[in-house]
Length: 232
Image (cartoon, rainbow, N blue to C red; front, side):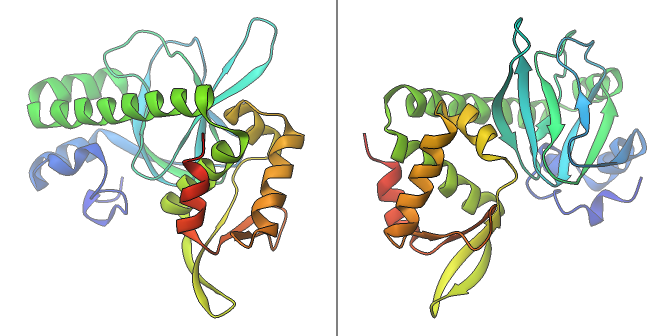
């Protein structure tokens, strides 16, 4: 595996707390994987054998119900942690929404390494608590917020995580490609696909966003989009 010093996710991944020497030891136990869009790297219900970091790309967490319905639970971006350390079973699947690169380790090897490096365990705990906070915020979003607020919150989060600077009408803007289909967005936000489409159209007509392509979003006014995200 290539040196962790060249890893684009190093500064924000849980391994950032390790010394260069410990990073080299961890690196020697891992490998890089290239994923194609739609590829599943972790399967719900399987034994937890794999953990790792997202280096680049976007992945989703999903579960399949007893009736066979696939439900999207969340989105993973660069430096997010994959898998369930110190656990026996995987509770959800992890699927690449875009082509992606990940850095993976055998779960047993990672667990042993983490036990010997409290700073890594501490980083893992911090990341777990952050993820828990995000989950709680999402529960509030789905339980109390309007359809407008749900869609606006999702677009705002996407622009902050994967948006790149762009110009639109002479003003600074953020552009990104939606890694999800409208149906995936609807499932994630607890809405119908028709409602998602109507809300995106409304935000476009208000001049808050542009949609130059089916999956292309340009955020023209992040402040107003944030206001929409706060609507009850």
